Image 1: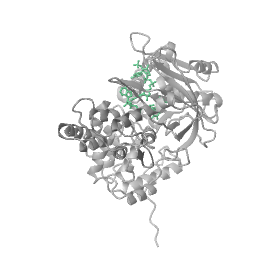
Image 2 (image 1 turned 180 degrees about the horizontal axis):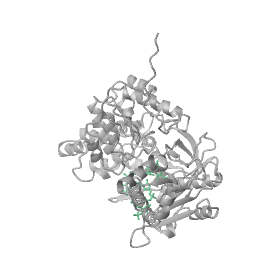
Image 3 (image 1 turned 60 degrees about the vertical axis):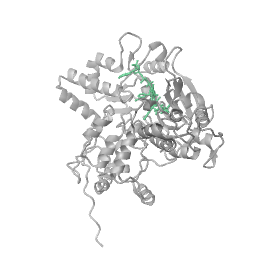
Image 4 (image 1 turned 135 degrees about the horizontal axis):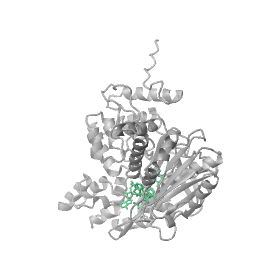
Length: 532
Ligand SMILES: Cc1cc2nc3c(=O)[nH]c(=O)nc-3n(C[C@H](O)[C@H](O)[C@H](O)COP(=O)(O)OP(=O)(O)OC[C@H]3O[C@@H](n4cnc5c(N)ncnc54)[C@H](O)[C@@H]3O)c2cc1C
Ligand SMILES: NC(=O)c1ccc[n+]([C@@H]2O[C@H](COP(=O)([O-])OP(=O)(O)OC[C@H]3O[C@@H](n4cnc5c(N)ncnc54)[C@H](OP(=O)(O)O)[C@@H]3O)[C@@H](O)[C@H]2O)c1
């Protein structure tokens, strides 16, 4: 029997991959190119050479987390389905779905992934758009057996399937402590969280994130149960309704399927309203504020069957946190830097599930299900002599605390510059003592601080970058790696613009050349982001 010829390599020899990675990527793209359902794509930042079989050029001009969904979809018009599905994602490559925007959309288009709600930052808008795109291809996963076979045949979303190293296989760690990092009078509650992983078999590197499985506030579950008018121990799938609502279901935001259920239980105008909400319309202008409790309260008198209610709710998803410690400095432990999300809608306090679970609902010593989400392209340069520039306002400081610990432990000699910013110096200077300590050992050689609410005019990290433009450009010219962590939608975009302006001004380059210079930093791995 004649053996089939080896596939034509799609990844150029010059591309910055190891032989193993190149072989993997060649196989991966060869597989994708053979698909008929428009699943041709390249991961973010990676263009397929020439045109793919379906005419797609592999570019992803919509891959910008600051771009609104409708603009992204317009840019993707006429592209194969998998590409349009990618455009529907939040473009953060944040890893919450277990992989990147390109990988997740590819698996949906291949019908290897039935879940359309894994893009947490994209929220309901993304899952709605995915649903309509999946309908275009005939309804997504039709045959569960076929889907299981495809999922099994597909390369794993995570590179590492060991327990605790992907979201499908979390392990038990133990909650050790929390310490509020803000001073009295701060508008923020940002906690330094310590988790014991010594018994868990977890391994991590600086730059990685930790996935945390939290539980809902029992008081919120109780309020929903009261609205349903059933006892808390009402049995649902061999457990009590209360347990299922606390541990397993997402209680915010209210999913479209809940409004669909409500539309069956009511009539007339109310049915129309529920139907409209299920379709993504917002007749009363309050759709963004409707969590599960608010949705039930909006339709007083309806009493969905608890089992049906649980059925239509989304599963509770883990949350990712950038690890703020180095395993070399603190073996057996992981530290996180977590801002507690709290805001008020009407007269009810809304609380982010995981951040407030870590802030006030988990007991010291209690078990906590976690996994390590490996960073893709967010790591210290191998040579400790290479200069690094870190920009991390607010909780964006988290991975940089880890970087500095690591550089101290490895006696890295290269210069390190941190841009940190927050609201007020006297109460929001997170890790002030530690940063001073890193300065005293020359682990941190420059610290630039931006306080946004200490003066009438806001001062942000990018303003401090512009102030020190000349020196910053010199660092880049000397081979510095540039890192950004924190808010994806505004801060990271503004920092990127500031960087381009600095390169244009200091390098005497036209804007196009400055953009190309910054683009080249990205593609060569010298400009890395961990944004959310
Ligand atoms: C790779 C990665 C790293 C991360 N690292 C960190 C980190 O180091 N530290 C950190 O604190 N977070 C970090 N996050 C964010 C974190 O994962 C969670 O998204 C965050 O803690 C909120 O989760 P939650 O469960 O508490 O809130 P949720 O229950 O998910 O609620 C948050 C949602 O509430 C809504 N909301 C929030 N504030 C308001 C408001 N003022 N008004 C109206 N609606 C509002 C928004 O819809 C928001 O999406 C990271 C995310 C990623 C992807
Ligand atoms: N997209 C999102 O929904 C999103 C994004 C990031 C963080 N978060 C959530 O917010 C919490 C973390 O907040 P945080 O502690 O990291 O701090 P933060 O609230 O993001 O703010 C940190 C500092 O950044 C400043 N800032 C605001 N806009 C900026 C911009 N465009 N460029 C540069 N700096 C800017 C803030 O100033 P002022 O506030 O005074 O303007 C503040 O001084 C987490 O729960 C996280 O999940 C959500």
